[in-house]
Amino acid sequence: MSPTPVHRQKIQRRPVHGVLLLDKPLGLSSNQALQKAKWLLRADKAGHTGTLDPLATGVLPLCFGAATKFSQLQLDADKTYEALLLLGQKTSTADAEGEVIATRPVPPITPELLAELILRFTGPQTQVPPMYSALKKDGKALYEYARKGEEVEREARHVTIYKLNMAPALDPRASAAIKIIVSCSKGTYIRTLGEDIGEAIGCGAHLGSLRRLETGGFTASQCIQLPALEAMSEAGREACLLPVQSLVAAYPVVTLDADNAGRFLSGLRRRGAPGQWGPDAAMVQVYGSDPSAFLGSAHITADELIPGRLLSPVEIQDMLASRSPVSSPAAYAAVA
Image (cartoon, rainbow, N blue to C red; front, side):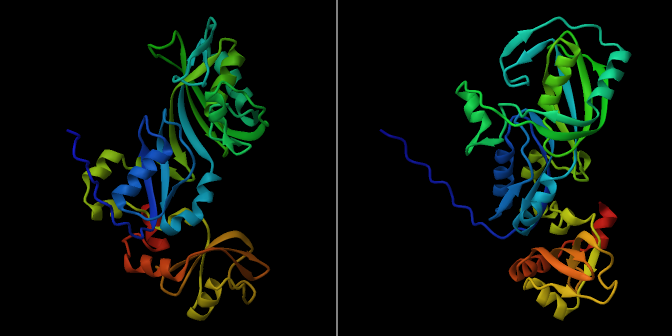
């Protein structure tokens, strides 16, 4: 007798607007973590702000609703990582999940060697993206080619390592290891950096662990873990959301009266008196006369306020209807 099919109850999705700072757990892809959080919040629209490998943990800002319009800012943001390099072995994936493809003896890891490596790998760098990455070639992710044993040509990319700390570490998986903390520009592959450091030492290396400590000003100490989120009520989960404008909190604020706000939301440039909007700026955050009414982003050129990413009237009303304690720029700055 065949088992009775189980019918899962359909979840009623709803508009949710804000940013959830998730501490991505080990073993989940960024998209799996996103879908779990989206399900818990019953959100109808969501996106993450840059892929973390299943092996990696740490800061993963998740954008819901209107916040997805500003997710590119986090994709472009500088980031900080902590990683453990296992020396003496090179793997097919450049991390602990891959097969060992080369083994070499490890020379003494002296303070002088570490100082030399820090100097060599700080500043502008050129990296060839790893085959096991989500970067696309001819419409397919590189890891799709890699899983079939294929290697395709990849263009080298220019990245910047702003700060690099290195120290000897102990790990039972290797005869020698190094812990590194890296502050870097967008697009930096820490697995590639680890491999390059291993080649510079002459013994090869792969990542034993990887954790993102910071991205675009958001730190691991601000994040919530999935088990804690699961244990909360729906209201508690929603209270964990930062407002949409937290993604642009670092930029100057421009406030518009009702007439200018309406025209601005229609996509019209607003000409101001000299200095009315402030000095020229590549980005500003724009509000209506209600300090909670975040309208979107803009830039200022020659006393002209030029719309960028705009919220819809429906999104603005949704956000005003669910005013949170940190919904104004001043309040957010107080808790950030």
